[in-house]
Image (cartoon, rainbow, N blue to C red; front, top):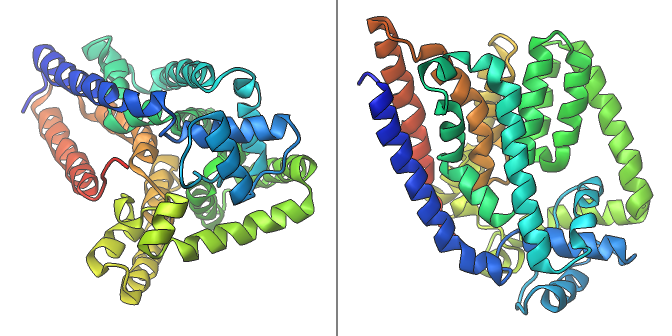
Length: 360
């Protein structure tokens, strides 16, 4: 169906209304600290006060004391340098930090839109608010906002990385990708594909940035704590294979909108599900490796093969989505056909992935 300005207003306006209703539903849980910002706030506080991080019992005690009592901790599973962002946000109360980060995430979203503006000119030509509404009405972005997640910051990093690649600055783009190692389960497959594509300047920037961030992380925690961090990641993944472990570490495999979550759901955690995950992930990476170098394609592949992923992480899909819609939203009959084709191709997988997700 041809997307006129009136239909776009109706469609995106309806999605934005649903977004606001979903955010209103999640706000009571956010207010009492039952969202992901809980772990970011307490980790920033622990780092600021000189307490050791990556200690489950210490995290549980701090979260219960600083935010709200809970039987389990929501463990901090990110590299140490990521905790630096939350040190200033932990200077005040939990709610103060939460609302500040909410505002900061809105700024990140606005900056991502500004970075992508030269590459979404057709959307703006059709209707000036189209690109902002496309971003703000996308459900994963709303969930990232309410959960206090870092997915919107990652969206900004990937958008800036894309813009630098388009400007012929692959080394700087690689440095930005290294910062996106905050969620290394997505960034590492992206870097692997650029290595296979022989984008050496990009890889050089990535490695230089990763080395600097590794040194910063060692300075923050020390080598022994980093080693325990690696062990805890493996331990949590192993323990979360049963219902008790899932509740303890808040790792719900069946809710993950990726290949691992899909095969875990249909196999109910059986070993053959993991085998199919590994096989299908290799096939996705092999197929992507045969294509032309493309950051949007690498992001899609990275999301599919990532081991740990939730619905708010799909915020990164806004980068390839906005490019596809910008390329195909024109007034010609051929453009109408292409727009309908891509809309079906994008909405189908998103709806399928959404069936495997439940708000925790």
